Image (tube, rainbow, N blue to C red; front, top):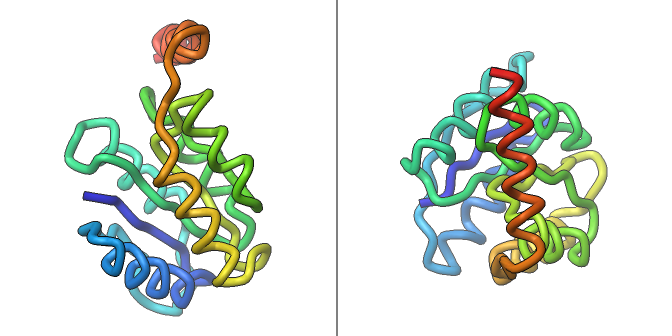
Length: 147
């Protein structure tokens, strides 16, 4: 199950990526927003990040205007490792090296076709572990000190 959430600026991209994920055989759980009225993205980012951290969802995709706000909000949740990506290479490495469990995208930054390519690179990559696992453990220790 993939958590997916957006703010009011990213509804069209969220719908397109939900269809893309379904086409690849992934189920999604939509954490909002659901309309074009102004919305506060930290609410949706936190809810989706908590679903990922709790294990309710395997990974999450967050979309706002730039992806930055959603990424910042998600990373406030202990255990969330969100990366904002604007091209496939960083998305791939965010999984392989950082075990990113959430991906943030900017609807005003990347075209829909590019967003799908970024998402595919992220989904297809696997965490390499090894020396990278030590660093991911460091992230978790930082988060634990800030709770």
